[in-house]
Length: 249
Image (cartoon, rainbow, N blue to C red; front, side):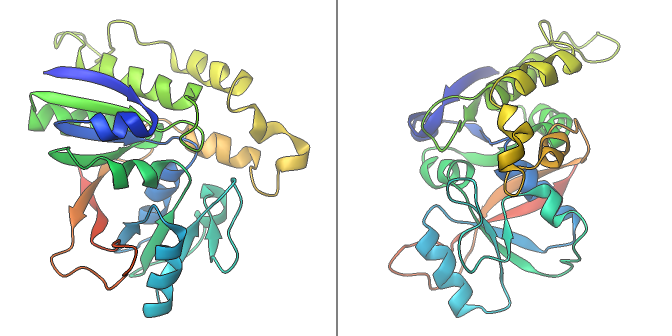
């Protein structure tokens, strides 16, 4: 198994094989919490216009997402686990658009298979890949608004890669160079995660989201990108044919 770590939109476009699109803060952490609230599926969209159009055509859909970290006008929720964790979304369909993670899904067109990545289900991701045994694994770090790499996404990719490459006889898994997770959290806290501790940003980047997004292995499932046989009519954006499905591991 060849495992590559790639960065940003170019990385998504270059991804091959089984691709993991990683967005720890906060798209694919949020998506896991959303599924834990009982939704049936999530339509990830790159274009915010497609999200609005899907909502217009399907009033019962729930809009979740962000632009510039904040909830867009007319959306039901921002891209925030702490806003969603206590909501009852059983049976709902969600449309999710963000500046990073959903852009990666939209651009990973050469992949054989796409799943999402975050620390909250990292262990399930490792088990899923081990079960599938693909020849190629692409770990794509989406960074901040697809503009520059971030600590949390790169460290998540390294954690997954190290676990996949760990000798099978280690008693607790444990990748060959896996940092102590508390050390990982502190690196992120001092680096790209510092914004979650800024008093002026608590209304859209609360500290609670930092903790929820770094709750290692909270969920025992992966989120796989599937193709809708009959795409939703989201023209002219051409989106609405891909959705996320939860697979318990």
